[in-house]
Amino acid sequence: MIDNTTFGTRTAIFHTLGCKLNFAETSTVAKMFADKGIRRAQTGETPDVVVVNTCSVTELADKKCRQAIRSFIKKYPNATVIVTGCYAQLKSEEIAAIPGVKIVAGSDQKLLLTEFLDEFTATHEPRTIVTPMREMRHFCPSCSRGDRTRYFLKVQDGCDYYCTYCTIPMARGRSRSGTIEEMVAQAKQVVAEGGKEIVITGVNIGDFGKGRDDNFFDLIKALDEVEGIERYRISSIEPNLLTDEIIEWVATSKRFMPHFHIPLQSGSDEVLKLMHRHYDTALFRSKIEKIRDTIPHAFIGVDLIVGARGETPELFEESRQFIESLDISRLHVFTYSERPGTRALKIEYAVDPREKHRRTRIMLDLSERKLQEFTQRFIGTTRQVLLEHSKSGKPMSGFTDNYIKVEVARQPQLDNTLAQVKLNEIINNGEEVKGEIIS
Image 1: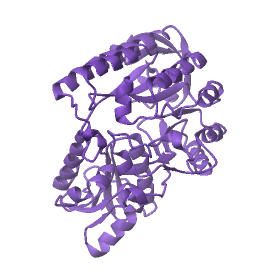
Image 2: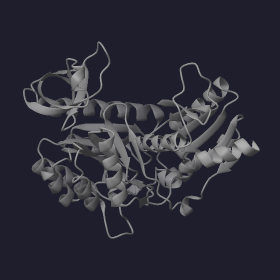
Image 3: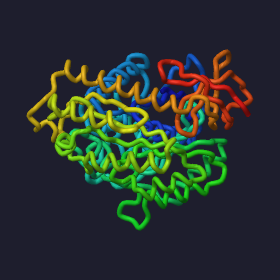
Image 4: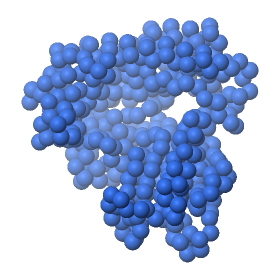
């Protein structure tokens, strides 16, 4: 996603790769540039500054970051190119060696980019500023508006879990979070801007408040009291941190939607141990069953890594059977990627790339079937949909409270409003439902 703005009398481009958390942070960076006097760059203007906020979740993500950086340097050879984010944190020397990159700033340095730019403008000396992982302590509140109607509110950063396949603790540092007062203030600002829905995001949001007397449950109860927000959604939350108390509270909440996103990563206890996850399949099943018993209509998305080191054919089949048995709504399938510096590389058994692809396809097919089965339950019913901004000549779309994507005939006056919609038929290979606005 690219946003064009101006820094003082100079134009700037912001380019974001990766997760919703990155987008929230880029939005905050852009607002800080706005404080320096920024206008939207017009089509055809050549930027003086390019800011690339990077991702490093997989080797493919690293490759996309390098391609983006080099593309901007080639296209705008006279621009001051600034690279920040997780890839910058993990591979700062690699990025600094790319001819044309002027500033490399680690994950926790994003809110200082305007200062770094001022310094470079004065000295013309390239800089690399990266805080060692164990010294990352500062939390940077961020909130961004998505492409449509929802906002993404960052409430937590970093992770203390150190799963064997993951680089996030190295890229984001220790777990830390904002205060409840700060988060409530951000939500009130969303109301002032006309926002109706907020997705609560972070690296490990269930860890909110770690080291303090408050916790994630306290946070969501406080956010629920903010008048003007119609909907909240909880993004990915670890199963061991998703308490029965939270599930029961969401069932009666005024504004929190019946929608959960829970990382499983493997349906094999042996693989979970190799990954150093903080739960087993029995606990995970208990969470799914608790949600279904308490909120039968809830959408349950599940993260899954396929082809991890140690996942033998027998353990993959064990994982597949476990997931098959769960009453979930959809899988988010990730093919395992080798990451330098991770402890997973010490696990001897490695899955052949072609076999990884085959297993990924099996799980994607299972996901498609799970989604269709879940969606089919609601065909013929009427549910509330938050309608999203639409383009001329195209249908409108939006999501039900329980996260079914719905397409309806375009009525521009209903942009960013809640409507009662009858769900008529599944379309687009199960990805959407054709709906009819009732009121």
